[in-house]
Length: 451
Image 1: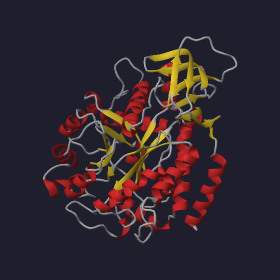
Image 2: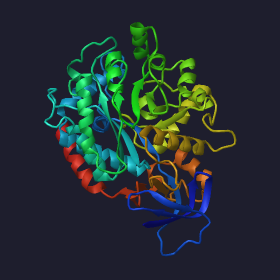
Image 3: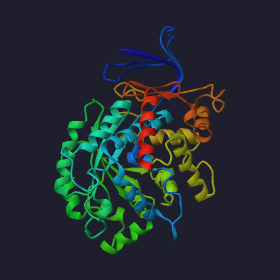
Image 4: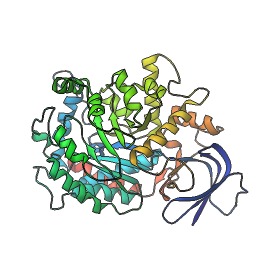
């Protein structure tokens, strides 16, 4: 049994002082008590918060950051960016992917995240041939999570088509394409790569353009207790193509054809109509928002104010990892709403700090989307926690909600001092415990890829 103390901590009932925590050998919180007489012999932190989970990631894309900023001969958009991403894929080996994922997890942990949902679709060799182990690449993602101590919900992705109506995959998609039946074999083979008590396996049909209704029915027939994630309504063209195919918008089609519930996470959903926003919010599904990626790719702005008014659940991901900082993601989310509505504190509850509302929303939605018992400092929950450096110039002299507001709206990863994932102490003094070794490996990989 390990014991920690905090002079201030954000508990489910609100801010508490002089908090004592006990963590068992599995990494779960056993006891949480406030107003304690703090023991001078026990490690004590100024401020402890629950640590959020990152609900959407394509880890290999961390290596692509900065390589897609040259404009082509015509207008640049998501679809032209996608072609550049496809051209990058053949270079990546399993060793490369493991190293890139480890570097990403280090960066995310140092910003305050404690776990990730990896929307994993880079399955095969460069020529499309399967590895001897169908789940070789899934194993590399899991290995990176184990090396870094980062929590993992693995979401093997089903991708079978290149567009609505069942068009076959094209050359750029061969590393991740499978029939529905072969995908389920790969998905089942992924289980053996998950070894830790807090590891979770979910399911991810990529999008309605990437699977037919028949494919989707087969995939969703898999028996599992994890979450189901899907890209939906990210781009205007995607919505237009879905209407041309089915007469319905993507979210509308999914609501009309499947039992959408709190186990689902709809990634992006930046192009929902008002009636879809209301209907999806009422299912209890999570909206998986990736604000810096959505800005980078020109996806559009999520209908946040209506979703918030409907009591919709949401969480934060970093998708292509153009940004890897929880504070920046939450700030971008709120600022996009301010620019849209020409107001301030759009996503705050009345009489509540904006950062508190944003942070607690991301905690709850992220935990739900990962199927992870986290997001609270409370008995029975994984000890996913973050400590802030109150000596940082942005935070000095601040307490409680004022501290959160300063971190989220004026701070960065530099404000984070310590992070735990399922009790694993992975960030100390602002640096990940494996930062040096992993950074050296990552540098070698990038030099090779860019040679």
